[in-house]
Length: 360
Image 1 (cartoon, rainbow, N blue to C red):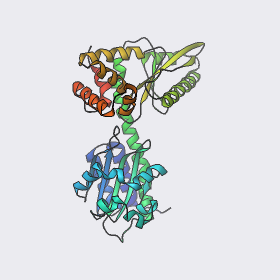
Image 2: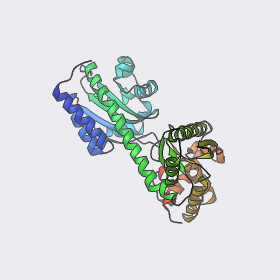
Image 3: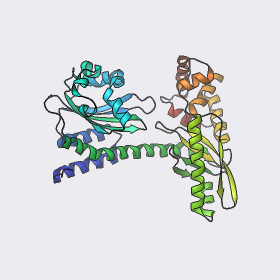
Image 4: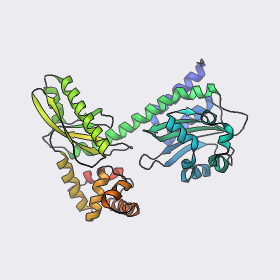
């Protein structure tokens, strides 16, 4: 482990601070890359963001590289990036091409011959932040001189800041999800007399409504209630993951003092690639379904579009919908496009939000 100068520590601290305060904006990344390149010299730098729904590159920030490089990477070469694929598969977060395969082998890849080599990318180093097993952000520093590879020391510096960038990204996404809950889900359940609990995909309790909080505060053994609730939630979420969203609704039992409650799960699709779950101490899913079914009628969706829209709400992919409806994926894609146009949304994740926010 190398030691760091006071200047390097100050710059790395600034990078970490910007990451936690402005990780999702172009302005924030302009500053992060500027600071990063004062510590590690390079000829070009870029941060490439991937869409959570499609897994495709969506936008980038950078300097020193022709914009057509990103355009070509977005339209074709991200699918032909063997080092990215290998890095994701191996769970590596900072690497150079030579860390993943022999340099001669890398220079014989289609990616190098048709893109990187054409734009003079002789050496680069990558930081990656992931959505589950997929790329969320790729940060790349590039050198055009073949005799100037990135050193182990420089890889070490990047390895110091990568966990902070990943944590900042996770925190920013969690805030987006919590904003989604506060603005959409919770208001849609205002007035209900039943308790509900919201869990993330990993089984962590995110939020309770007022009735659930009152139940929690009134129990004689809060830790026992929480443990039993999380156990039941994990069972439901695991079962949902095994059977797929929107299949048969499952339930579980949890205990509060001497009382038993039957929980049922209802998946919700906040921003990001993975669903969260509402757990009900009664079938509160009926309230949500009744609300969004009314809204679907108000938007003039056809019977087939309503059927497909409900599957989208449950998080099914076009392929899964095609299998359930015995339609082609192309036909399903056309229906999804029509649904988005009628609701006036650009993303599948906004469908449920728009339906729940519609006054019936």
